[in-house]
Length: 327
Ligand SMILES: NC(=O)c1ccc[n+]([C@@H]2O[C@H](COP(=O)([O-])OP(=O)(O)OC[C@H]3O[C@@H](n4cnc5c(N)ncnc54)[C@H](O)[C@@H]3O)[C@@H](O)[C@H]2O)c1
Image (cartoon, rainbow, N blue to C red; front, side):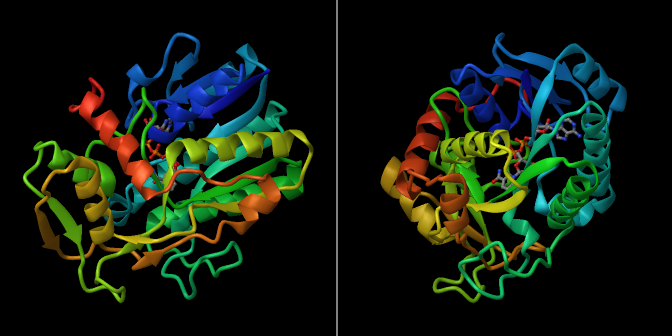
């Protein structure tokens, strides 16, 4: 029996694949490499290059491997791009997701873990954000994830597909081997580290007039290894025959953009020049998780705080100043 990991050559997916292999799980990766890196995968992983919406390919995978469960990371993930190109996001994240689900349910796969996001909540009406918080995404990216959650709820009712939708807050940090390399990079910590390395002159801070103490946006950062450990718990949870759930994954602590820049200055000892730019469309002011449910339902708790997250990312960026070989 194998676990199908879609998007397994991406940032979070690649760390997940390593963790699964370390647990002696058998892993099949499906990734179109549109945003991922072939170098992240070693030869213990069976790899299929292609899109999740390619039903023939997914059928072939299910015929060649007995897929027990699927962890679905594959998606387009840029909020700004989703505002500019919504059709791309609904196509890749929702239409392809439906194609994948249809083939998997027909093949008898009974468990599914979805990479969902804090973006399903939109501008918070209260913080920290628990799973019962109203859902009014502020951008198409958030809507695509919320739609996938709704589709899963109906597939559960109709076809008995059990799922865990994990709503990540901001993934960050690195393992020794694997780190964050997006192109373009829109995430804060790698961008600050690029400035620390002298690869860029300064870091852009989008918006300094938010209703927050220092005017910059507040986010909840969670180490990619903590995040992936939660997926292992989700697999155990599904294997134990439990009911479907949507669960937040975060540290429960919010840091403003300027506080993160300060943390990077402390860790790296580098001066970092800041440029204030207008806020990005669809970016809420404050996203901080109430992760109580992850503790009670999955028995999971994060161990890395901001400083440790930045330290791990700094180590990786120093050893991979140009990221992975490909872009
Ligand atoms: N990084 C974060 O902070 C964060 C926060 C919340 C949710 N998420 C979600 O977690 C998941 C992984 O995020 P990431 O940061 O690792 O992104 P990533 O871009 O590094 O990885 C996504 C991977 O999926 C692949 N992919 C994209 N569309 C595909 C398709 N249609 N078919 C096959 N492969 C496809 C890409 O090539 C890439 O390797 C995404 O679903 C994202 O929405 C990420």
